[in-house]
Length: 307
Image 1 (cartoon, rainbow, N blue to C red):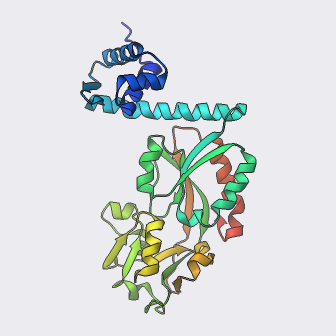
Image 2 (tube, rainbow, N blue to C red):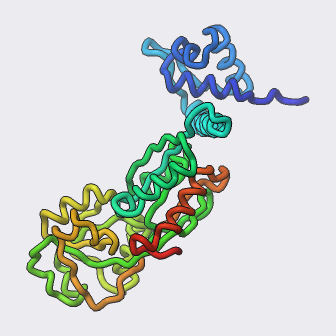
Image 3 (cartoon, rainbow, N blue to C red):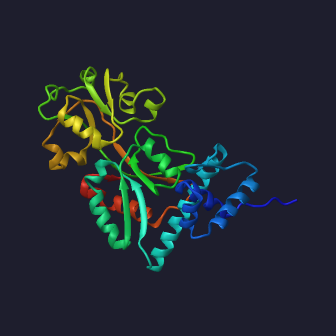
């Protein structure tokens, strides 16, 4: 005997009910009657064989089983919205929307010129651009809130459900605030008693060394500030006594170079590699493809090299 199959409309009813907190608001959101909304939810629960929502004085909420279904269904809803946007853009009816994260080092250097060029290639595009470390961005990529991530790949192993494509590279330097009393030292081993600002990587997540110190076979510094975003780390670097690594193109910016000293250590510092990360089960958007191409194309102008 064939079992009834889930329908897209039923799943969207569950997503709308959860997102809007009630049957009436969800029905209004979907443009259907309350009766049709209630019927879709009831049929979905019958097919699944488990209660998915619970009603209360404050509206509806998801049961634990409903939350499992919602997580998958909400991804489908976002992908359908993206598809609708892309079809509209192809037809010239409406602007395409693309959401992605980039590190501050790229946002302050190469990204503005790349975005301006991208606008000439793909007109009527709405950009939603954010910043954040890879660990906070991957869940947003997984559930469809982000289309892709451009991020620093050093120290992070990307595999499985995601695809990582290296794009551009640049050298890095050790920096401290302007006039730091230890700016003259020539070895990182002399800086291990100082404070460092580090972005968490896979090693730190596993309770191991940060890749910078692991690759140089050095012990971890005694004092560390973990900064998940450069926007948070830079003010602490400028005003405090901590050390950090910085992409060389950043040091060419007047807003940065006048506030830091470069510490010329003898160790071979890592080459920063920036890559584009996307979900392996979702086709790359046209915007992501063009952005990757333009980043590589404009790399030499900002002292980046193509990866």
